[in-house]
Amino acid sequence: MTIGSGTASGTAAGNGRTALVAGATGIAGSALVDTLAGEGWEVLALSRRPGPGRPGVRWLSADLTSAESLAAALAPENPSHVFFTAWSRRDTEEENIAVNAGMVRDLLGALRGKGVAHVALMTGLKHYLGPFEAYAAGEMPDTPFHEEEPRLPVRNFYYAQEDELWAAAGEQGFTWSVHRAHTVIGHAVGNAMNMGLTLAAQATLCRDGGEPFVFPGSKTQWDGLTDMTDAGLLAEHMLWASTTPAAANEPFNIVNGDVFRWRWMWPKLAAYFGVEWEGYQDAPRPLGQSMAGREDQWRRIAAENNLSEPDLGRVASWWHTDGDLGRGIEVVTDMGKSRDAGFTGYRRTLDAFTLLFDRYRADRLIP
Image (cartoon, rainbow, N blue to C red; front, top):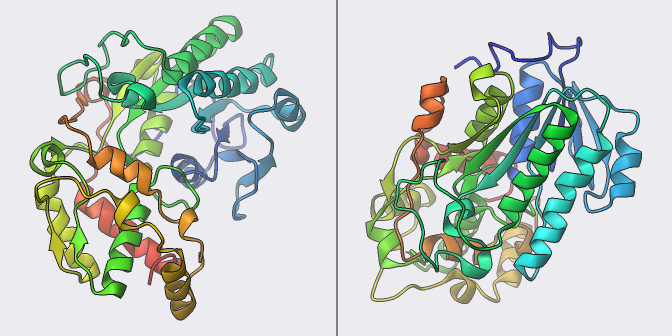
């Protein structure tokens, strides 16, 4: 698929196609930086700390939770398109709402009067499942999830972010899109929600200790259908919606386009790492318990293999993978709305995993 062919706004690179990526060092943000730069866009990569240098990318440092910091960083900038992929996890949903909705509001406020054409906001399936505090606990729409489902009757920071986006669009005149992804896997370190690197770390630790690669989740997840989102495909989707008139002012689900069962996927992941595996047996076996206290083991593995990240806490997010794989409901997502609007991007999830693992090895994140 040629990304960004059919533009709703902006012209060729260097003539008003400047993308601001908020959260540029995260899983989704780093994939967007790669995709946009590869398509010839001028990229303003916004994060607390700068990432690696590359042609066409300029790093901006700011604290997304500070309106003053954002205003100072963005004062001289004039992006035509904005891609918001950042989030900050807090202890309660009310705090999540205050901080994460505030980041959207303050960033767009700092761009007021600058002629932004489109803003793409990344959210996720907690739109349908509920926030962390009430995750998959109440009455939810039936699967597969469709974009037209009404909001759940609970407070949710995704809803608050959407409300800020819509309010700013009404005031400032840009078009918008919302992108609801499911379990994004991609290339990022230190991210709070990265199943790809988490499973790679689990398999590495198991192989080192001569232990089986144990599926940590529920019977429902082991036996039921599920889907996922590759970060590169998410980036293509956000760029497509930002430059396609038929996609303006709409929310979209974004998943790879295939479905699988973990009882099919798990042995294939184990084979990649050369470890024996165990599936679901009687009850979940959470990673937060089985992988606790492995920091010194990882430090030793990192030293022996000259890995680039010796801190296991920056590699694995056990809690997030336990949450995804421990769900007691089947979660699958409909992509019909994007297909009808012309998006044809697709990833085979097994290939997304193995290509990602290959990249982790090349970058010495795993041995």
